Image 1 (cartoon, rainbow, N blue to C red):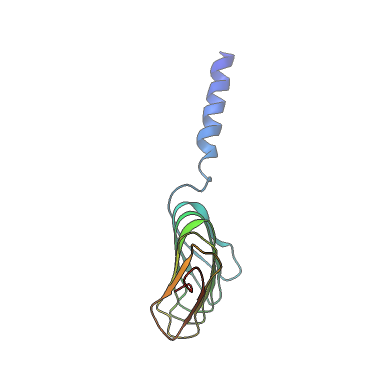
Image 2: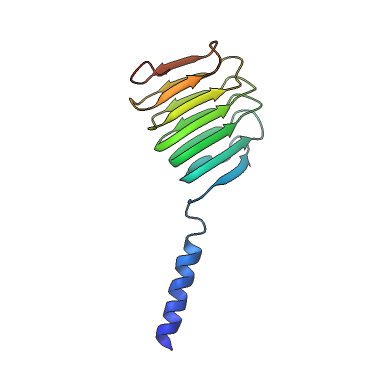
Length: 138
């Protein structure tokens, strides 16, 4: 009987221990000043509820950020692809990840800097800037 109790407790701990382990997909919103990070295995989509969120993209997978009011920053690390839709303008991406960094829907004052040889920045508006990376980053 004692072995069965230990086995049941061990099984419960292993099952419930996985709930917050960061594996799977995440879709959420965050406010400026809150923890706006995606550090998991899987896909992560976060929407900023105001201007100026600081998004962090780590782990393994894809990070998709939305910043309708502008002024957001993205720090991408790990084995990730990161993108931000920045309708409000003034967004910045700093990429040292092994994947891509993409800024979309930005009309002005957005920039993407690739700090690693692997990361490649791209933007869909020539009025914005890209720098760094193996081939100039863009």
